[in-house]
Image (cartoon, rainbow, N blue to C red; front, side, top):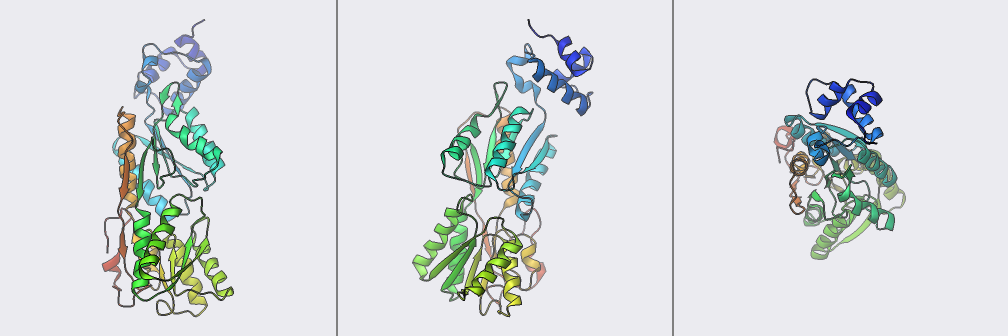
Length: 359
């Protein structure tokens, strides 16, 4: 027996008129009632006619953003770009945190597929090579809700399905420039306080550093971190000191790790930059308020959020063209953690939360 609007109304505990207003996207229905109606539609398996033939007419005006960690300042900047874009479109961006754990990320995506969501922007926490991850990544571009595709745009990765739109920074070039800068100022024993091997774009970062070493000469030791935090950088340098293998140049996975490394060196009485030069990555505000200020790669994370939002919005609106892969350029900002002669005025090197100043 076919399900009628009155059956949906009964299941939702509302009038048939309210159900009709929800189906017709009337602005005169509160979010609570909308949720009840949408839930009842799912429970009763109600087929809307003719709306059921084109569920694009039943948009929720809500997208999901899945990030690995809110402890990473650059992730917040990405979200600012996304939020600002969709606010102008009257679409709500809802934030989820995966804690850089694959199973948690997968669980979030599965839950979102069951919700009434218009699209997803995903920054993966891991990029593994096992069958489970490969199956998951391939399925990302086939997410559906009642036969309507849920588009996904991936950030800072090239390991997920190439059938999705992606936006990322050119990590290989950025870390090549970091390493080349250290080598150009005479450093030869480098350490990389990097991420875990299964982190997105980790291989690009190592490849960039190794390319610089092959051109300039020098050695590299690698310490892998998992959380990109200040304490990761701090404890990594403490480990180097205990192992009596202190390098004369340290490349850090982000500015937070660099700040922790800087603090550990200061505690140990190591002079920065004359004894050890340190570089970061990201260009967040933290990098300019440390003493000394951190040489870093300024990455256009706000613009990344905007571009990903643009891609997702176009997909939501019906664009069915081939997947697009945007690679953004970053810029090296040389400061006092590698050169004493670098600019010391905060006015000369300030960076706002929209990455609009590169100095």
